[in-house]
Image 1 (cartoon, helix red, strand yellow):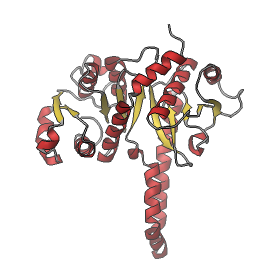
Image 2: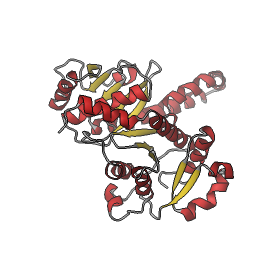
Image 3: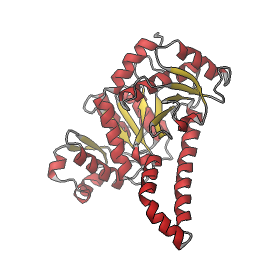
Length: 331
């Protein structure tokens, strides 16, 4: 029920996901009185409804609500009910396009954190100039991270890159202001020292440019910094695409050039389009949690479900639990 284009975009994306992956079963969580009349309108045939179930939730978390409202005022909100399905073992994962904070609270407190994980982290998959993905985390779940938290983010990001993205021994870095070991804050330097003692491919400090040049596969940082990087990157990508489109419309000659360049432009746009990746996985919880952009259209919803499906198939949270137990000190 969340997101700028709900429930239209979420229902349409869910239908496309059911059509694309025959082994998929979806719980459609929300106000039944709103959802049921729209199912047929959005293409949910009887065959598709054999692999879908509407689960009623009487409340919706809106952007003005506090993230913690799901714990008291809105216990029957769609995001809490969806998270409860995962907690009870009825569902393997949850996908949400709504209130990011509420989705993180539901995932951390209702589904629960993995043993040994202090703070779950949001991971964003960004395209780099080598045509491969770069995993950046945390991108907003934690804005006051300590060194041990950033070290945990790096471990979880490494597992995600290896298991879901298929990157063998991913190259891991800590985002800092210089590549030299002595650069950075006390927090980043302490996190680096911790990672050097672990059995991961840690390659030291990563600068901002390394997010895009493909020199690292996983870059860990504080959630405040990561969120700023992510939001500015989204705006820059939209500005580049919009600027190129406007330039091609300036004259008959540039319009002709635009027509010739259209296939290449389409491919370039796909690389920069957040909807191609669907959503950000919240790593460190006892299940799969994918948190999408509030502006998500049906394609982004479909791809967010695909991201959840991949994480389930690769038993991502179990792999993270195994690696955390091996690499991080346990209480």
